[in-house]
Image (cartoon, rainbow, N blue to C red; front, side, top):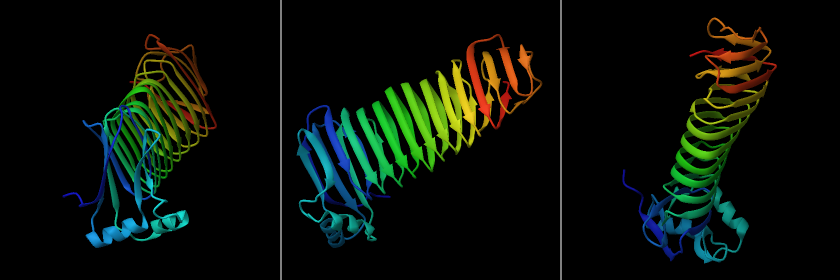
Length: 304
């Protein structure tokens, strides 16, 4: 399917790294790199030229340079009644797609209430916030901070010192992450973690979280919901209350776990302590410490 026609475009010069600020409600935003020292903005709509210009008259978008930052946001100078601009969002207008091309080295602050965000192949300090729409981030590097409220999040192939993701109410997928630190805060989400390198800390409130091929130290605070983890060959600390926890002990470890009820998927191995509520001892020759304290819910332990 061909892309909708461009109904408005802008090109502005920028330094490297580029400094970008985007705050546009109810749009489909795509930010991708190119080789020029410019920021190129193309606004597309799948409608007639006449209707597109009517939409842009009600919802004008400005592209400006302010103190070396490229700002893409509602043009309240053209339409000074800010409330009128927001009222225009409630109309059944055609979908507005905003395509932005920037240098690969870009620091960005992006807010899209009620819309979608697609970003790829950027390296910098990037903050992303969306409400009610999807966030899709691929092949990113640097420091990445994502907040998504009632929208789906995908972060795939990230490398850098820090990844922080906060999600509420939908799905969160993190795959192929190589970060010194990954911080995850989820509430009522379905969360999938796969191929995570580096320190991983998780705070979850309800929902369901699963993790496989985790390769760094793991810290978890869980309140409600369910948690299923394949433990990494590094230290694990888990505290849970009212959470159904399943730990797949994929590596030898020094296990110290307690719960309302401890259940094994097979015959319990010989451990120094092994009761219905407490297990402690070296498993498969020992290794990293795995500590788990589960209050008010069972703990399921699975051997390889």
